[in-house]
Image 1: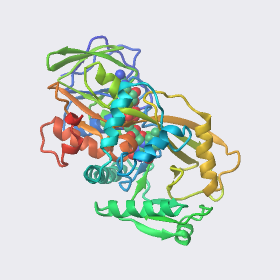
Image 2 (image 1 turned 60 degrees about the vertical axis):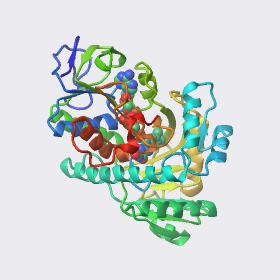
Image 3 (image 1 turned 90 degrees about the vertical axis):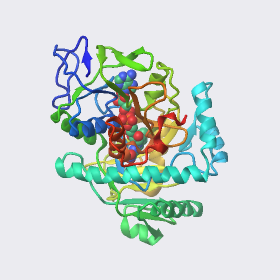
Image 4 (image 1 turned 180 degrees about the vertical axis):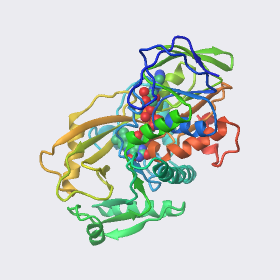
Length: 439
Ligand SMILES: Cc1cc2nc3c(=O)[nH]c(=O)nc-3n(C[C@H](O)[C@H](O)[C@H](O)COP(=O)(O)OP(=O)(O)OC[C@H]3O[C@@H](n4cnc5c(N)ncnc54)[C@H](O)[C@@H]3O)c2cc1C
Protein backbone atom coordinates (compact mmCIF):
# COMPACT_ATOMS: atom_id res chain seq x y z
CA UNK A 1 0.00 0.00 0.00
CA UNK A 2 1.41 3.46 -0.83
CA UNK A 3 1.44 6.56 1.30
CA UNK A 4 2.87 10.05 0.92
CA UNK A 5 4.21 12.10 3.81
CA UNK A 6 3.29 15.66 2.82
CA UNK A 7 0.64 15.43 0.14
CA UNK A 8 -1.22 18.16 -1.68
CA UNK A 9 -3.69 18.44 -4.53
CA UNK A 10 -5.28 20.60 -7.22
CA UNK A 11 -6.97 19.59 -10.41
CA UNK A 12 -4.95 20.13 -13.61
CA UNK A 13 -5.46 19.31 -17.37
CA UNK A 14 -7.22 15.95 -16.94
CA UNK A 15 -10.18 15.90 -14.56
CA UNK A 16 -9.11 14.15 -11.36
CA UNK A 17 -5.38 14.69 -11.84
CA UNK A 18 -3.97 16.10 -8.65
CA UNK A 19 -1.00 18.37 -8.16
CA UNK A 20 0.83 20.43 -5.72
CA UNK A 21 -0.95 23.19 -3.93
CA UNK A 22 -3.90 22.28 -1.73
CA UNK A 23 -3.59 19.62 0.94
CA UNK A 24 -5.36 16.27 0.57
CA UNK A 25 -4.61 12.90 2.05
CA UNK A 26 -3.48 10.33 -0.47
CA UNK A 27 -5.04 6.91 -0.68
CA UNK A 28 -2.73 4.00 -0.10
CA UNK A 29 -1.95 1.93 -3.17
CA UNK A 30 -0.43 -1.43 -4.01
CA UNK A 31 1.71 -0.24 -6.89
CA UNK A 32 3.47 3.07 -7.39
CA UNK A 33 4.29 3.87 -11.01
CA UNK A 34 6.94 6.52 -11.60
CA UNK A 35 6.35 8.15 -15.01
CA UNK A 36 3.13 9.39 -16.55
CA UNK A 37 3.88 8.90 -20.24
CA UNK A 38 1.95 6.50 -22.43
CA UNK A 39 3.77 3.53 -20.89
CA UNK A 40 3.03 4.50 -17.28
CA UNK A 41 -0.57 5.48 -17.97
CA UNK A 42 -1.46 2.42 -20.04
CA UNK A 43 -0.08 0.27 -17.23
CA UNK A 44 -2.03 2.25 -14.63
CA UNK A 45 -5.17 1.76 -16.73
CA UNK A 46 -4.62 -1.98 -17.18
CA UNK A 47 -3.90 -2.53 -13.48
CA UNK A 48 -6.90 -0.43 -12.45
CA UNK A 49 -9.19 -2.67 -14.51
CA UNK A 50 -7.90 -5.58 -12.42
CA UNK A 51 -8.93 -3.81 -9.22
CA UNK A 52 -5.34 -2.98 -8.17
CA UNK A 53 -4.83 0.24 -6.21
CA UNK A 54 -2.33 2.32 -8.20
CA UNK A 55 -0.63 5.67 -7.80
CA UNK A 56 1.15 7.29 -10.75
CA UNK A 57 3.52 10.23 -10.31
CA UNK A 58 5.40 12.32 -12.84
CA UNK A 59 7.98 15.06 -12.53
CA UNK A 60 6.07 17.17 -15.04
CA UNK A 61 2.62 17.33 -16.61
CA UNK A 62 1.14 13.95 -17.41
CA UNK A 63 1.94 12.99 -21.01
CA UNK A 64 4.38 15.83 -21.65
CA UNK A 65 7.48 13.67 -22.06
CA UNK A 66 8.18 11.77 -25.26
CA UNK A 67 4.52 10.75 -25.44
CA UNK A 68 3.40 14.32 -26.18
CA UNK A 69 4.13 15.03 -29.83
CA UNK A 70 5.13 11.80 -31.54
CA UNK A 71 3.81 10.89 -34.98
CA UNK A 72 0.82 9.10 -33.47
CA UNK A 73 1.33 5.96 -35.54
CA UNK A 74 -0.20 2.70 -34.39
CA UNK A 75 1.65 0.63 -36.93
CA UNK A 76 2.73 -2.96 -36.18
CA UNK A 77 4.50 -2.86 -39.56
CA UNK A 78 7.16 -0.77 -37.80
CA UNK A 79 8.40 -3.48 -35.50
CA UNK A 80 12.04 -3.41 -36.54
CA UNK A 81 14.52 -3.10 -33.71
CA UNK A 82 17.08 -0.31 -34.14
CA UNK A 83 20.11 -2.62 -34.54
CA UNK A 84 19.71 -4.58 -37.79
CA UNK A 85 22.17 -6.95 -39.47
CA UNK A 86 24.61 -5.17 -41.77
CA UNK A 87 24.35 -1.80 -40.03
CA UNK A 88 27.93 -1.56 -38.79
CA UNK A 89 29.24 0.73 -41.53
CA UNK A 90 26.04 2.75 -41.52
CA UNK A 91 26.30 3.40 -37.79
CA UNK A 92 29.86 4.69 -38.20
CA UNK A 93 28.48 7.07 -40.87
CA UNK A 94 25.84 8.26 -38.38
CA UNK A 95 28.59 9.44 -36.06
CA UNK A 96 30.13 11.54 -38.82
CA UNK A 97 26.98 13.20 -40.15
CA UNK A 98 25.47 15.54 -37.53
CA UNK A 99 22.42 16.46 -39.63
CA UNK A 100 21.71 13.03 -41.17
CA UNK A 101 18.36 11.43 -40.30
CA UNK A 102 20.18 9.17 -37.84
CA UNK A 103 23.03 10.48 -35.75
CA UNK A 104 25.04 9.28 -32.78
CA UNK A 105 26.50 12.26 -30.94
CA UNK A 106 30.06 11.25 -29.99
CA UNK A 107 30.68 12.06 -26.32
CA UNK A 108 32.87 10.72 -23.51
CA UNK A 109 30.28 8.70 -21.61
CA UNK A 110 30.37 5.26 -20.00
CA UNK A 111 26.67 4.86 -20.77
CA UNK A 112 27.25 5.59 -24.48
CA UNK A 113 30.29 3.27 -24.68
CA UNK A 114 28.38 0.40 -23.06
CA UNK A 115 25.32 1.12 -25.15
CA UNK A 116 27.29 1.11 -28.41
CA UNK A 117 29.10 -2.12 -27.65
CA UNK A 118 25.78 -3.86 -26.94
CA UNK A 119 24.24 -2.24 -30.03
CA UNK A 120 27.01 -3.66 -32.23
CA UNK A 121 26.62 -7.22 -30.95
CA UNK A 122 22.84 -6.98 -31.39
CA UNK A 123 23.16 -6.63 -35.18
CA UNK A 124 22.51 -10.27 -35.95
CA UNK A 125 19.76 -12.05 -37.84
CA UNK A 126 18.73 -14.45 -35.07
CA UNK A 127 18.18 -11.68 -32.54
CA UNK A 128 16.47 -9.47 -35.12
CA UNK A 129 13.94 -12.20 -35.97
CA UNK A 130 13.17 -12.84 -32.30
CA UNK A 131 12.81 -9.10 -31.68
CA UNK A 132 10.52 -8.52 -34.66
CA UNK A 133 8.33 -11.39 -33.46
CA UNK A 134 8.10 -9.96 -29.92
CA UNK A 135 7.51 -6.39 -31.12
CA UNK A 136 4.82 -7.23 -33.69
CA UNK A 137 3.01 -9.30 -31.07
CA UNK A 138 2.71 -6.48 -28.52
CA UNK A 139 2.01 -3.94 -31.28
CA UNK A 140 -0.83 -5.97 -32.82
CA UNK A 141 -2.36 -6.46 -29.38
CA UNK A 142 -2.07 -2.69 -28.81
CA UNK A 143 -3.73 -1.83 -32.13
CA UNK A 144 -6.78 -3.92 -31.15
CA UNK A 145 -6.74 -2.37 -27.68
CA UNK A 146 -6.68 1.18 -29.11
CA UNK A 147 -9.60 0.29 -31.40
CA UNK A 148 -11.42 -0.84 -28.25
CA UNK A 149 -10.41 2.34 -26.39
CA UNK A 150 -11.83 4.34 -29.29
CA UNK A 151 -15.12 2.42 -29.00
CA UNK A 152 -15.20 2.84 -25.20
CA UNK A 153 -14.35 6.56 -25.33
CA UNK A 154 -15.62 7.71 -28.73
CA UNK A 155 -14.21 10.88 -30.30
CA UNK A 156 -11.44 11.29 -27.75
CA UNK A 157 -8.24 9.81 -29.23
CA UNK A 158 -8.58 10.71 -32.93
CA UNK A 159 -8.27 7.04 -33.92
CA UNK A 160 -8.29 6.53 -37.69
CA UNK A 161 -7.60 3.36 -39.61
CA UNK A 162 -6.37 4.54 -43.01
CA UNK A 163 -3.30 2.35 -43.32
CA UNK A 164 0.30 3.43 -43.74
CA UNK A 165 2.12 4.21 -46.97
CA UNK A 166 5.88 3.73 -47.14
CA UNK A 167 7.48 5.32 -50.20
CA UNK A 168 11.01 5.29 -51.61
CA UNK A 169 12.80 7.17 -54.37
CA UNK A 170 15.84 4.93 -54.80
CA UNK A 171 16.14 1.32 -55.94
CA UNK A 172 17.80 0.43 -52.64
CA UNK A 173 14.95 2.10 -50.78
CA UNK A 174 12.30 0.16 -52.69
CA UNK A 175 14.22 -3.05 -51.99
CA UNK A 176 14.30 -2.19 -48.28
CA UNK A 177 10.52 -1.53 -48.15
CA UNK A 178 9.83 -4.90 -49.78
CA UNK A 179 12.19 -6.67 -47.40
CA UNK A 180 10.37 -5.09 -44.48
CA UNK A 181 6.99 -6.00 -46.00
CA UNK A 182 7.99 -9.65 -46.34
CA UNK A 183 9.44 -9.79 -42.85
CA UNK A 184 6.38 -8.38 -41.06
CA UNK A 185 4.04 -10.43 -43.30
CA UNK A 186 5.54 -13.51 -41.61
CA UNK A 187 4.20 -12.08 -38.36
CA UNK A 188 0.69 -11.44 -39.63
CA UNK A 189 1.03 -7.81 -40.77
CA UNK A 190 -0.15 -7.60 -44.39
CA UNK A 191 1.33 -5.18 -46.92
CA UNK A 192 0.88 -4.53 -50.63
CA UNK A 193 3.67 -3.62 -53.05
CA UNK A 194 3.05 -0.46 -55.08
CA UNK A 195 4.78 1.03 -58.11
CA UNK A 196 5.04 4.79 -58.72
CA UNK A 197 1.60 4.94 -60.35
CA UNK A 198 0.01 2.90 -57.57
CA UNK A 199 1.45 5.30 -54.99
CA UNK A 200 0.05 8.39 -56.75
CA UNK A 201 -3.37 6.75 -57.18
CA UNK A 202 -3.50 6.00 -53.48
CA UNK A 203 -2.10 9.34 -52.29
CA UNK A 204 -2.32 12.07 -54.95
CA UNK A 205 -0.65 14.55 -52.57
CA UNK A 206 2.71 12.87 -53.21
CA UNK A 207 5.03 14.28 -55.88
CA UNK A 208 8.67 13.88 -56.91
CA UNK A 209 10.62 11.01 -58.28
CA UNK A 210 9.16 8.15 -56.24
CA UNK A 211 9.97 4.67 -57.54
CA UNK A 212 7.80 2.46 -55.39
CA UNK A 213 6.82 1.41 -51.92
CA UNK A 214 4.41 -0.56 -49.80
CA UNK A 215 0.92 0.07 -48.46
CA UNK A 216 0.04 -1.52 -45.12
CA UNK A 217 -3.77 -1.36 -45.11
CA UNK A 218 -4.51 -2.33 -41.51
CA UNK A 219 -2.43 0.29 -39.71
CA UNK A 220 -3.93 3.19 -37.75
CA UNK A 221 -3.00 6.56 -36.28
CA UNK A 222 -4.28 8.72 -33.45
CA UNK A 223 -3.45 11.78 -31.36
CA UNK A 224 -0.65 10.85 -28.92
CA UNK A 225 -1.42 13.29 -26.11
CA UNK A 226 -5.15 12.57 -26.42
CA UNK A 227 -4.37 8.87 -25.91
CA UNK A 228 -2.49 9.61 -22.68
CA UNK A 229 -5.26 11.92 -21.49
CA UNK A 230 -7.96 9.36 -22.23
CA UNK A 231 -6.02 6.59 -20.50
CA UNK A 232 -5.45 8.90 -17.53
CA UNK A 233 -9.10 9.87 -17.25
CA UNK A 234 -10.16 6.22 -17.54
CA UNK A 235 -7.59 5.15 -14.93
CA UNK A 236 -8.73 7.89 -12.54
CA UNK A 237 -12.33 6.77 -13.03
CA UNK A 238 -11.17 3.31 -11.92
CA UNK A 239 -9.57 4.79 -8.79
CA UNK A 240 -5.97 5.46 -9.85
CA UNK A 241 -4.33 8.38 -8.09
CA UNK A 242 -2.39 10.55 -10.54
CA UNK A 243 0.04 13.14 -9.23
CA UNK A 244 2.03 15.36 -11.62
CA UNK A 245 4.92 17.71 -10.73
CA UNK A 246 6.33 15.20 -8.27
CA UNK A 247 9.87 14.15 -9.06
CA UNK A 248 11.60 11.10 -7.63
CA UNK A 249 14.93 12.18 -6.18
CA UNK A 250 16.12 8.94 -4.57
CA UNK A 251 14.93 5.70 -3.02
CA UNK A 252 14.68 4.39 0.50
CA UNK A 253 16.24 0.94 0.26
CA UNK A 254 16.55 -1.90 2.74
CA UNK A 255 18.56 -4.80 1.26
CA UNK A 256 16.57 -6.20 -1.67
CA UNK A 257 13.50 -4.12 -0.85
CA UNK A 258 12.50 -0.61 -1.86
CA UNK A 259 10.83 0.93 1.16
CA UNK A 260 9.86 4.26 -0.37
CA UNK A 261 10.72 7.03 -2.80
CA UNK A 262 11.96 10.46 -1.78
CA UNK A 263 10.15 12.90 -4.02
CA UNK A 264 9.96 16.65 -4.32
CA UNK A 265 6.62 16.35 -2.49
CA UNK A 266 7.73 14.04 0.30
CA UNK A 267 8.26 10.31 0.79
CA UNK A 268 5.84 7.95 -0.94
CA UNK A 269 5.67 4.31 0.11
CA UNK A 270 4.11 1.37 -1.68
CA UNK A 271 4.28 -2.42 -1.91
CA UNK A 272 5.68 -2.46 -5.44
CA UNK A 273 7.44 0.19 -7.53
CA UNK A 274 7.47 0.50 -11.31
CA UNK A 275 9.87 2.68 -13.26
CA UNK A 276 8.14 3.88 -16.43
CA UNK A 277 10.54 6.77 -16.73
CA UNK A 278 11.40 6.57 -20.44
CA UNK A 279 14.69 8.22 -21.35
CA UNK A 280 15.37 9.18 -17.73
CA UNK A 281 15.53 5.50 -16.71
CA UNK A 282 19.34 5.17 -16.86
CA UNK A 283 19.72 8.16 -14.54
CA UNK A 284 17.10 7.00 -12.07
CA UNK A 285 18.40 3.41 -12.30
CA UNK A 286 21.89 4.60 -11.40
CA UNK A 287 20.57 5.88 -8.07
CA UNK A 288 19.63 2.23 -7.38
CA UNK A 289 22.96 0.90 -8.69
CA UNK A 290 21.14 -0.61 -11.65
CA UNK A 291 22.48 -0.82 -15.18
CA UNK A 292 19.57 0.39 -17.32
CA UNK A 293 21.18 0.98 -20.74
CA UNK A 294 18.77 3.50 -22.20
CA UNK A 295 19.84 6.49 -24.26
CA UNK A 296 17.56 9.31 -25.32
CA UNK A 297 17.07 9.30 -29.09
CA UNK A 298 16.02 12.83 -29.91
CA UNK A 299 13.39 13.33 -32.58
CA UNK A 300 11.38 16.31 -33.78
CA UNK A 301 7.86 16.89 -34.90
CA UNK A 302 6.63 20.01 -36.64
CA UNK A 303 2.97 20.86 -36.98
CA UNK A 304 2.19 22.90 -40.09
CA UNK A 305 -0.98 24.34 -41.58
CA UNK A 306 -2.49 22.06 -44.27
CA UNK A 307 -1.24 22.61 -47.80
CA UNK A 308 -2.71 21.81 -51.17
CA UNK A 309 -3.08 18.94 -51.87
CA UNK A 310 -2.92 17.75 -48.28
CA UNK A 311 -2.12 14.07 -47.60
CA UNK A 312 -4.97 11.86 -46.43
CA UNK A 313 -2.90 8.82 -45.39
CA UNK A 314 0.11 8.66 -43.03
CA UNK A 315 3.28 8.42 -45.12
CA UNK A 316 6.83 7.32 -44.35
CA UNK A 317 9.28 8.96 -46.75
CA UNK A 318 11.82 6.21 -46.43
CA UNK A 319 15.20 7.63 -47.37
CA UNK A 320 14.51 10.90 -45.54
CA UNK A 321 13.08 9.03 -42.53
CA UNK A 322 10.21 11.52 -42.35
CA UNK A 323 6.82 10.53 -40.95
CA UNK A 324 3.89 12.56 -42.29
CA UNK A 325 0.64 12.38 -40.35
CA UNK A 326 -2.56 14.09 -41.50
CA UNK A 327 -4.41 15.65 -38.55
CA UNK A 328 -7.83 17.23 -38.28
CA UNK A 329 -6.81 20.76 -39.28
CA UNK A 330 -3.03 20.44 -39.64
CA UNK A 331 -0.24 18.10 -40.75
CA UNK A 332 2.49 16.67 -38.53
CA UNK A 333 5.98 16.15 -40.00
CA UNK A 334 8.21 14.07 -37.75
CA UNK A 335 11.68 12.68 -38.02
CA UNK A 336 15.35 12.29 -37.14
CA UNK A 337 16.90 10.14 -34.47
CA UNK A 338 19.86 11.61 -32.68
CA UNK A 339 21.32 9.58 -29.84
CA UNK A 340 22.04 12.35 -27.35
CA UNK A 341 20.93 10.95 -24.00
CA UNK A 342 19.17 13.76 -22.10
CA UNK A 343 20.02 16.78 -24.25
CA UNK A 344 16.67 18.39 -25.07
CA UNK A 345 17.99 21.38 -27.02
CA UNK A 346 16.39 22.19 -30.38
CA UNK A 347 18.64 22.47 -33.44
CA UNK A 348 17.14 24.71 -36.13
CA UNK A 349 19.12 22.86 -38.84
CA UNK A 350 17.31 19.65 -37.99
CA UNK A 351 13.93 21.35 -38.13
CA UNK A 352 14.87 22.78 -41.54
CA UNK A 353 16.05 19.35 -42.76
CA UNK A 354 12.66 17.80 -41.97
CA UNK A 355 10.81 20.61 -43.75
CA UNK A 356 13.13 20.43 -46.77
CA UNK A 357 12.79 16.64 -46.99
CA UNK A 358 9.00 16.97 -46.91
CA UNK A 359 9.04 19.65 -49.61
CA UNK A 360 10.73 17.21 -52.01
CA UNK A 361 7.71 14.91 -52.00
CA UNK A 362 4.78 17.03 -50.85
CA UNK A 363 3.50 20.50 -51.64
CA UNK A 364 4.72 21.92 -48.34
CA UNK A 365 5.14 25.67 -49.08
CA UNK A 366 8.55 27.30 -49.19
CA UNK A 367 7.87 29.02 -45.87
CA UNK A 368 5.21 26.88 -44.22
CA UNK A 369 3.12 28.28 -41.41
CA UNK A 370 4.51 26.44 -38.42
CA UNK A 371 2.15 25.95 -35.52
CA UNK A 372 4.45 24.00 -33.23
CA UNK A 373 7.98 22.64 -33.14
CA UNK A 374 8.50 19.86 -30.62
CA UNK A 375 11.28 17.49 -29.72
CA UNK A 376 11.15 14.36 -27.64
CA UNK A 377 13.58 11.77 -26.35
CA UNK A 378 12.83 8.23 -27.46
CA UNK A 379 14.00 5.80 -24.78
CA UNK A 380 16.36 3.57 -26.81
CA UNK A 381 17.74 0.24 -25.62
CA UNK A 382 20.83 -1.07 -27.45
CA UNK A 383 19.06 -4.23 -28.66
CA UNK A 384 15.92 -2.37 -29.75
CA UNK A 385 13.55 -4.20 -27.41
CA UNK A 386 11.81 -2.60 -24.40
CA UNK A 387 12.65 -3.63 -20.86
CA UNK A 388 9.59 -5.11 -19.16
CA UNK A 389 10.40 -7.10 -16.05
CA UNK A 390 12.08 -7.22 -12.67
CA UNK A 391 15.78 -6.41 -12.25
CA UNK A 392 17.78 -9.06 -10.39
CA UNK A 393 18.71 -6.91 -7.38
CA UNK A 394 15.30 -5.96 -5.97
CA UNK A 395 12.23 -7.99 -5.05
CA UNK A 396 9.63 -5.24 -5.39
CA UNK A 397 10.94 -3.19 -8.30
CA UNK A 398 9.75 -3.49 -11.90
CA UNK A 399 10.95 -1.80 -15.09
CA UNK A 400 8.59 -0.80 -17.93
CA UNK A 401 10.76 1.31 -20.17
CA UNK A 402 12.94 1.49 -23.30
CA UNK A 403 10.16 1.54 -25.90
CA UNK A 404 12.31 3.49 -28.39
CA UNK A 405 10.50 4.37 -31.66
CA UNK A 406 7.39 2.36 -30.91
CA UNK A 407 6.21 3.25 -27.42
CA UNK A 408 2.81 4.49 -28.52
CA UNK A 409 2.06 1.62 -30.85
CA UNK A 410 3.12 -1.01 -28.31
CA UNK A 411 1.98 0.60 -25.03
CA UNK A 412 -1.18 -1.41 -24.46
CA UNK A 413 0.56 -4.74 -25.12
CA UNK A 414 3.49 -3.68 -22.98
CA UNK A 415 1.06 -2.79 -20.19
CA UNK A 416 -0.69 -6.14 -20.53
CA UNK A 417 2.61 -8.00 -20.15
CA UNK A 418 3.74 -5.83 -17.23
CA UNK A 419 0.39 -6.11 -15.45
CA UNK A 420 0.35 -9.90 -15.90
CA UNK A 421 3.85 -10.18 -14.42
CA UNK A 422 3.16 -7.73 -11.59
CA UNK A 423 0.01 -9.55 -10.52
CA UNK A 424 1.45 -13.06 -10.87
CA UNK A 425 -0.87 -13.88 -13.79
CA UNK A 426 0.36 -16.21 -16.55
CA UNK A 427 1.53 -13.72 -19.21
CA UNK A 428 -0.09 -13.88 -22.63
CA UNK A 429 3.21 -12.86 -24.28
CA UNK A 430 6.57 -14.54 -23.87
CA UNK A 431 8.31 -12.27 -21.33
CA UNK A 432 11.77 -13.55 -22.23
CA UNK A 433 12.76 -11.07 -24.98
CA UNK A 434 11.79 -8.19 -22.67
CA UNK A 435 13.41 -9.38 -19.44
CA UNK A 436 15.25 -6.74 -17.40
CA UNK A 437 18.08 -9.13 -16.51
CA UNK A 438 19.41 -9.42 -20.07
CA UNK A 439 21.89 -6.54 -19.71
C1 LIG B 1 9.60 12.47 -33.24
C2 LIG B 1 9.05 11.20 -32.60
C3 LIG B 1 8.06 10.48 -33.27
C4 LIG B 1 7.58 9.29 -32.71
N1 LIG B 1 6.57 8.63 -33.34
C5 LIG B 1 6.05 7.51 -32.78
C6 LIG B 1 4.94 6.86 -33.39
O1 LIG B 1 4.39 7.32 -34.38
N2 LIG B 1 4.48 5.71 -32.82
C7 LIG B 1 5.06 5.17 -31.70
O2 LIG B 1 4.66 4.10 -31.26
N3 LIG B 1 6.08 5.81 -31.08
C8 LIG B 1 6.58 6.96 -31.59
N4 LIG B 1 7.60 7.61 -30.96
C9 LIG B 1 8.17 7.02 -29.73
C10 LIG B 1 7.26 7.26 -28.54
O3 LIG B 1 6.94 8.62 -28.46
C11 LIG B 1 7.96 6.79 -27.26
O4 LIG B 1 8.40 5.46 -27.42
C12 LIG B 1 7.01 6.84 -26.07
O5 LIG B 1 6.43 8.12 -25.94
C13 LIG B 1 7.75 6.49 -24.78
O6 LIG B 1 6.81 6.58 -23.73
P1 LIG B 1 7.27 6.56 -22.22
O7 LIG B 1 6.04 6.63 -21.40
O8 LIG B 1 8.21 5.44 -21.99
O9 LIG B 1 8.15 7.88 -22.07
P2 LIG B 1 7.72 9.38 -21.72
O10 LIG B 1 6.50 9.77 -22.46
O11 LIG B 1 8.92 10.21 -21.92
O12 LIG B 1 7.35 9.28 -20.20
C14 LIG B 1 8.30 9.13 -19.18
C15 LIG B 1 7.87 10.04 -18.06
O13 LIG B 1 8.70 9.82 -16.90
C16 LIG B 1 8.76 11.02 -16.21
N5 LIG B 1 9.93 10.99 -15.31
C17 LIG B 1 11.23 10.82 -15.66
N6 LIG B 1 12.02 10.87 -14.56
C18 LIG B 1 11.20 11.06 -13.50
C19 LIG B 1 11.41 11.21 -12.10
N7 LIG B 1 12.64 11.18 -11.57
N8 LIG B 1 10.34 11.38 -11.29
C20 LIG B 1 9.08 11.43 -11.81
N9 LIG B 1 8.83 11.31 -13.13
C21 LIG B 1 9.87 11.13 -13.97
C22 LIG B 1 8.91 12.06 -17.32
O14 LIG B 1 8.54 13.36 -16.88
C23 LIG B 1 8.00 11.51 -18.40
O15 LIG B 1 6.72 12.12 -18.41
C24 LIG B 1 8.10 8.82 -31.47
C25 LIG B 1 9.06 9.58 -30.79
C26 LIG B 1 9.53 10.76 -31.33
C27 LIG B 1 10.54 11.56 -30.58
